[in-house]
Length: 177
Image: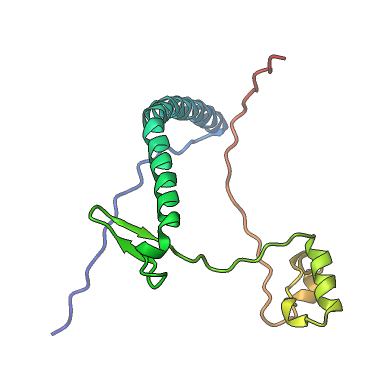
């Protein structure tokens, strides 16, 4: 028994296609009007969100400050009593009836106190080449500048495409000094 092929039907595109230059110019003007209206709506939304966020930030600030104060006080208590709390430093987690106190070691991090070039020079002078990364990478600008030579290299393909862009004319408002 042959399998029945499923046909996929798609709705016809419901778009207005300009029939001449005047209609195309009118469509561009309409895109510009709609773009500006969209920008107005987005600006209004951002203004409203900003006011709303500011309102909630003000409401939350006393709680944030209270949490910070309580945390600092708990840290002072825990550090002063750490030996007793951690069974002479044998554990890093202390269970309380309402939560836990924890001491966690952060992962090591490397910070430079001088410029990277000076640190690299110091590593080279000390014979610590393993501290220096030598990573070759392709110079894509040079490849684009010499496409004839680059097209003979396996693995390189220079691509260029074309996009359709509509740019409605818009005037900028003068800034008030």
